[in-house]
Image 1 (cartoon, one colour):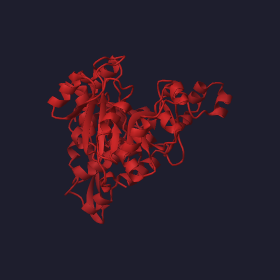
Image 2: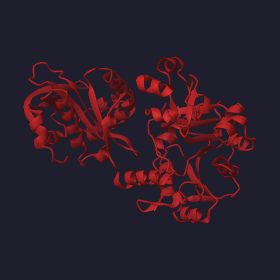
Image 3: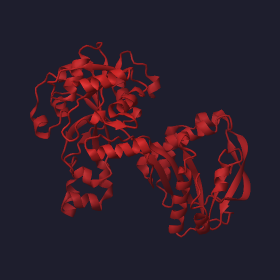
Image 4: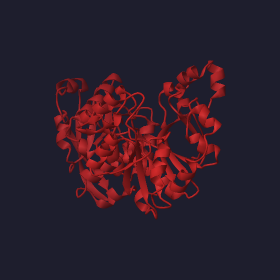
Length: 446
């Protein structure tokens, strides 16, 4: 089910608890990012979520109050005596309509993806038995598993949270016995990483549950682990943990702020080799690129049949092929924004060793040199793999033919391809010497 298929019969309200004082970075919510306070970036991201009806900032500080009010957004002054963000949003929620859905969005996450909020809200709208929804993401770094600052969550087969902990859970007993320590086991058996999920700080509550929850006394496990959500579990709450693909960065330190600032103000692009966990993000870029770049050029029937679900499955299968490689471009704010992939030549009658299957970019990131960088990464990897020639097939009607020619592609043949039973002519571009091509195009910009 898509979020746009759900029409909530109750209000969905995001509340951002906002204190001025912070232990490690005081006044962080008012630090300037791209000309406006950090908290306004968070607020604007929350407002982009398709199933959120309104956003309210809950603060105890006059400076934050004035900042939000002068921006034209809704802000409520709350008590200075609250011990947690949940208590602060509960004070606001008490005056909101009954049966509302309340989202606790951390004010120090200016990069939070609207899709993250949407997925958590969607989960609670779909299942009336859930009291809370929260989010989690895969862990790729063994250090995060061992760190007590990274909260881990384990769930049952339905995605309901069983426990949250600062300790590594689950514990792979046999692997640890084999290698001596968990650290060694994680290093030697990379597949163990797939067992772990990092809990992230977004919460969605049913209003009535939130009001009850914040009146409950702290529990023993909550005090031991210093994790508020354990109070909910110990009191029988059903918490759905939704796995997300769009990561965020919480600003807790000066280093975090500088990292976020570089991303927002410089929109830093990160390039890396892709893995199977990227399949969803890659599929989104693929489908979006076709729909936005080829609308009116290729049959609408073909575009309608091109779905994220189908492409995600196709990419997952591709990653299982031994000679398949892909590189992605991403930003911390937007996630994966482009990719290029290659593998063995599918046409046996061409004198080329490999095939560059495709280069796709989200529309707003085109014409920025990102495609050229991805192209060169594929070239470099081919050369490293002992491959020195490649070809690429493009539709004659493609708006990107000039890019392939700029990157040194020579027309070496023509063919045809069917889209929704309509035949289209294709052009085959070839690169006979990748080493020379890479050198001659090193300074080109897409």
